[in-house]
Image (cartoon, rainbow, N blue to C red; front, side, top):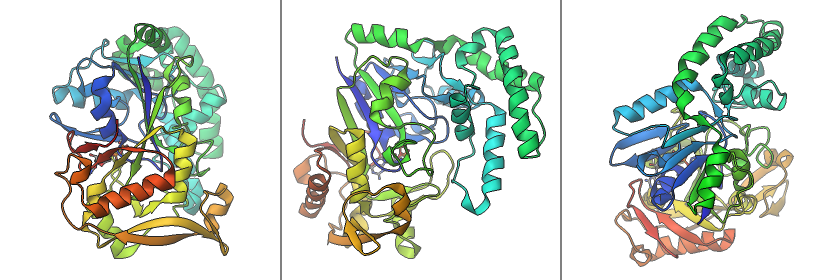
Length: 426
Ligand code: GDP
């Protein structure tokens, strides 16, 4: 039996989806343990190209049970839409291969509205929210004003609970933001229409996971976003509202008592970041445009152009540390093939003092990147399947980064397809 988490080391979009899709064949269960439909994994396989926001990436393997854990927040309308699209592409989704924690939290339309209203109020100081209601819903969870998916089983109790919450929420919507109040009956119709369709999938995922664990099943935890977006350890307040760290995975699954054996940290061969916040190694102008185009760096959930730059070693080293990564998957190496020289951000200059450590977030505004370059390889590497088939310059780059971040690079990804990968060390 193995338990493994696949997590992002940086700002997200590192290619976790393709890694889960790849390794899921060795696992019986794949779990999403945090976040909502604010980010997404892109998976390319024989069924087509999919942007998954809520459904775990193991859904493409027939025998895998996919779990939306207790740490997630679920917009039922969005989830129904995602399931419909997958079914249309020929993917089988049943209560046997897809289960939702009864303790996961429902994202209501008023969360989405509040998210937009707050971003507008913040104007030029906005956090870069995806406006999917994620910060308000996690806020409500900690204020104990959230509604769980399991409450859909008891519509009368749900209605009373929602009525209480709505009276409170409408104070914020009408008095603070001076917007129109939400109506209980409309919200009940909405949640019963979409939540009702999901009812057969809603269960105590902890019971299922403990049984699977006892039977020696292999369990894979799939994170959304990356370490630098963790609400506790990231670039606060430009973080997500959840915990993408591996150590949160058991808590957010429904079975906090199951321990993780392995943590695969996914690192992209260059840096990308969606939305606001400090991004020290950022490139601008033509250089940035070329890299963005080469990598196809547009958000999976929102289509927003991503900010791009060279790999950032202080940030990556920090991400490896807080994730407790035991192996690295290095992705999108092929994207750098057009470059004469490979740039690397090796340190930060903070008011004249050079540091290789990732600083406390208040200092990030003062940090300037220190760049160095390495020779490029300038040839197509997408056909390489063994490590020694890579040009020596590519291998030098890999080994340099590996040495700097203190973690073995086990997987080298040279293309988006399932087989475009080099397994370097067992
Ligand atoms: P995630 O949220 O971490 O899964 O990241 P994304 O959804 O942004 O996935 C990264 C994107 O890069 C997807 O479109 C993948 O198909 C693609 N991708 C993943 N690995 C590679 C790779 O090694 N090379 C190239 N060219 N594309 C890749």
